[in-house]
Length: 200
Image (cartoon, rainbow, N blue to C red; front, side, top):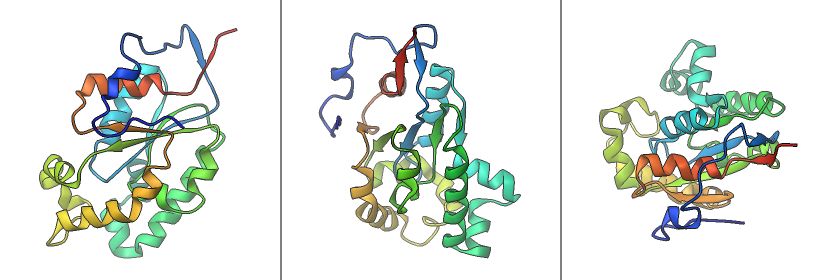
């Protein structure tokens, strides 16, 4: 299992090589799945990686909100977290046989038993690693839209989420330091980790 740990120099293992392109390789049936704390940047990074690879991108939270006609916060408030996790599971089962995509599930998706097994193998999971303090700073006022972070102590909530989920996060195929890596370099590195096979 390949991993890039914090401080190891994310780009060093792949520096000097360009991201694969659809012209030179073919996507395998596996998805590229980004996991990490809520607010770490899975949606922003995922959309950019998908554009780089020429693959569709699916943000789980956005798709669930579109289908339900309600925000994630409203689903949590009205139906509870368990109901939201059921919607995530149903969407996971739906994309299981879909063509290769870049996926950004919710922060807790990877820690729910059975979700990972639905997509890996052949999917490949990338953990975007950043400290709770960094994530909270990036979120700003956006944290009030996150049902698990809208309380009086969002930093404490993030720290607890990381403590609860870190074993699941670190079971990813690759761990990327999302705290210090420049955005464009982050996109390039993750694109190189996507499942591909040689054309022909």
